[in-house]
Length: 217
Image 1 (cartoon, rainbow, N blue to C red):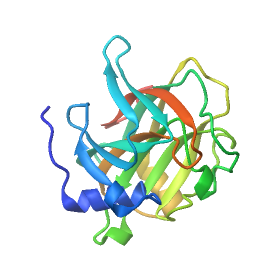
Image 2 (cartoon, one colour):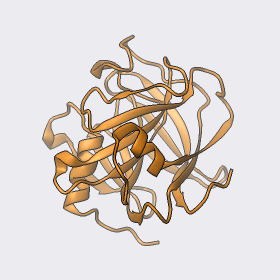
Image 3 (cartoon, one colour):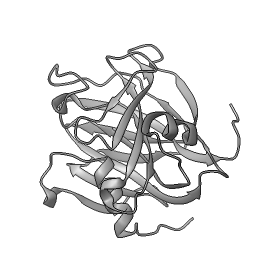
Image 4 (spheres, rainbow, N blue to C red):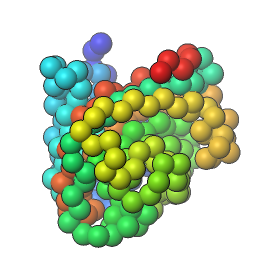
């Protein structure tokens, strides 16, 4: 697979769903260390690197926020299932105690995004599957920076640290549930480990999300 430049529309979409209170000049899209993915930097760089022995992408955020993004342009009706895995040895260590639902607490040891691009950038919508340090599995809320993205908790607390966890979601059903929208095309998927709002530190490893015709776990 060869790297490719994200289209301007998709960059706008990703900036919308990964929106941050960083100066516009701090946001940039660059080629990432992972072939076929780009990196959007918001507040310093989260370090991403391939770990061939474990078959995953290591992420280390230290007061930083950047995400890996891949444009897919996939027919959601043909590939409605998104599958990924993640691993963390320790939870996010926040530098402040702000709640995750607030702007100053909106950091997560792991996040996986699925993006639906609208005709106009303000119509773009996303679902953000997260490992929460506060809220139980099944919780959801609008992202504190933009209501166009919904946070959905798929793992919670310290339970499961030190082990791999596999997930799969029917993103067509999730868009209907959380956005009341019919999803025809999946524009992009993304991952991010971030710690800029809390001024903390987080480490994780991802087996990156892929799209599938049917459930497989």
